Amino acid sequence: MKSEDNKLLFFAPAIISFLMLMLGLGFDHVFPQDWFQGWSRIAWYAIAYLPVGLPVLKAAWGSILKGDVFSEFFLMGIATIGAFAIGEYPEGVAVMLFYSIGEVFQGMAVRRAKTNIKILLDQRPDVVTVIEGNLTKEIQASAAEIGDVLQLKPGEKLGLDGELLSERSSFNTSALTGESKPATKEKGSQVLAGMVNLNKVALVKVTAAFHDSKLSRILELVQNATAQKAPTELFIRKFAKIYTPIVVYLAIAICFIPFFFVDDYDFSDWLYRALIFLVVSCPCGLVISIPLGYFGGIGAASKNGILFKGSNFLDSLAEIDEVVMDKTGTLTEAVFQVQEVHFEPGFEGSKILHFVNALESKSTHPIASAIKAHVGELDPEVVLDDVEEIPGQGLRATAEGKELLVGNFKLMDKYAVSYDIDISRIVFTTVAFAYDGEFAGYLTISDTIKADSQQTVERLNSMNVGITMLSGDKSSVVQAVAEKLGIANFFGDLLPEDKVEKFKRIKADKGKVAFVGDGINDAPVIAISDVGIAMGGLGSDATIETADVVIQDDNPHKIPIAILIGKKTKQIVWQNIGFAFGIKVLVLILGALGLATMWSAVFADVGVALLAVLNAVRIQYMKFG
Image (cartoon, rainbow, N blue to C red; front, side):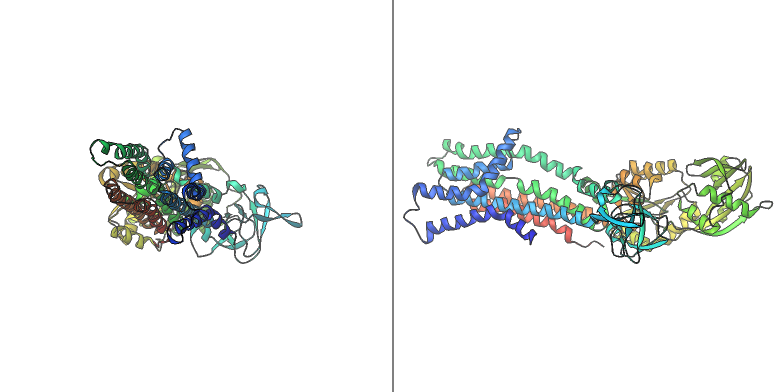
């Protein structure tokens, strides 16, 4: 009911003006009144004009004080006041009335788009339950502090980011990722604001303040996304600043120049034509509907779990010729399992594995989780010193005073560790290890291809978008994944700097190129791509900061959806531009020739603006999946 009252409040000035206009037209043509003449008639229409005209005139004056004389408000003001000046009072009221209604609808469309995004993302409760000793109390979520322990009942939403203290709990994460399948979290796992507890009471320790949660940052990101304007949007704004004064001078020319060339020149007739010209030429439909089109595209993407950092990236993604993808975490699950363990003679396998497990625990790579799952919990007696990460190769440390190396065979080569292994015959990802300068053995790990990867490749191919896969994984693994998915271009055994060089060559050959990666390791390539797309952005703060587009879950199928939304947004924006210009030019010509009325001008301005806004809004209701 409150929402309906707000809508009526928005339309109240228009309703008052409309009723007075209808009564005035009735007094003029249906049931004439003796008193409705002269100054009383003028006063009636002037009062009818004020509710809708006064805000526009105030806005025009405010723009003039800021140095922006030729605003749309100025155009509407002089056009309608001019109509009063030549005695066309009903038309003056009608033009401003319909303009005002159009502005209300446009404002409502923008508010609806923003509200939809906010409702979609800001799923946090206002109140949370905090445990203090043996008691619980409810406080404002914004008042909770880092370290507080929250009690989360079944069906409740988590208000802040935190660490799960309970042994296990299932959460609905759809508000964050768009993924309907519940996620089961183990003790120590990160849980995020907006997740819904599903089965039993859970305890969560707060790890980030209310305003620092990932959900807050993403919400701010989307709401501020229009700060980075698309080229089309920037062009229209610049165009309007040049176009509007030209139109005013042309209207003056239409009014006065015919005096020197027309024998039966009638000032009122030519002023009326000039006023029609002014009303038609008002660029409000373009200036408002185009940003709304881009905002609608950002909103549609958000509904699909895709976050654009600016409308310019919608345009860029619409023109992408090639998508370059990382393998692990993008096309594959990044959930590894140890397949085979091989030790060289003379090494105690159990001891070496515990060393490897301890060193890999210092890494965030998914391989570390696979090794831990295979070996078990860390051995508390294993102490590592001088731990060092070698980018793209592995880890180095000192264990019991001796050098320990864990990584790929490039790491073995770097430290001149000799081995008698034909690595070309090993298909799976290989983790080699050396101890005290001697090759100790290796283990193999395999990853599984995501269920939607095949569909992603097929859909990109159907859109005539090329695909290249780059990976630091060994070439045999990359080849096996590429062949299974039908990707013709692929490169493996790439260090971060190799990826950058390879990407530069692809970009030089293919035109506009997007890069899809799953974290901070891909930042150098994301930095030089036309559009950087981050997979699983909720898992990495750095990803949210560096990427242009963030896919909230790890679903690769969102990549073609993001491209489609970019293409559809651009299509709608250009439809609005073509439609608005076409109608306006036609009515401008008719108005200058005296063949169009003020009512035609109203349609060409307000009607076109409304249709353009409705066209822009419809993208939010399209299905792209």
